[in-house]
Length: 220
Image 1 (cartoon, rainbow, N blue to C red):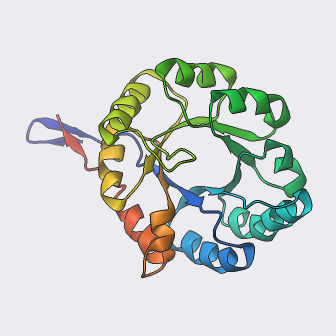
Image 2: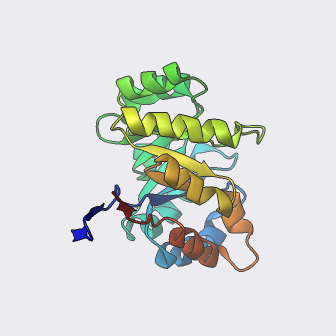
């Protein structure tokens, strides 16, 4: 549309939310929390981090939450455990680094989602894309809870958004990181444990996070 001689064109569609559920939330407690959270906003995917347990217990844990997630139209992804995805009825897995991703490809593809994080270099990210990753993630904490600098995460997302069509997920370590990740070009915004630690409840925190995703129109 036109306005006073200037064209006003919308930017790309607003990113969607990607919810990372900490392993500290058990299946019984997570069911109600997830149902409320998924009702509060549009969530594209839920990443389930599994506790240490035997295989049967892990499968039961996933199955107890699968219908809650999938009935809301969200994809249920396991953090690792590619061998359990089909057995537990999940939609795919998020792999922690390029080596784990490559090892899981034969198990997951082509029927299931395979996402890749822990991409320390541009080469690793491009290798994941060439290997058939359904998405890449930048900025998530490692096993020790350490994250890259936020400026480095924004730079990597901006580079990816400019060059590649495969979606990227930007990990928000706090609410105030959402808008910069959106502006950098992330297709999905991952919300971590801070959402579940919110004293008002995860649903309220997720609803507010969703409100930060909208992008203003640009005037040219």
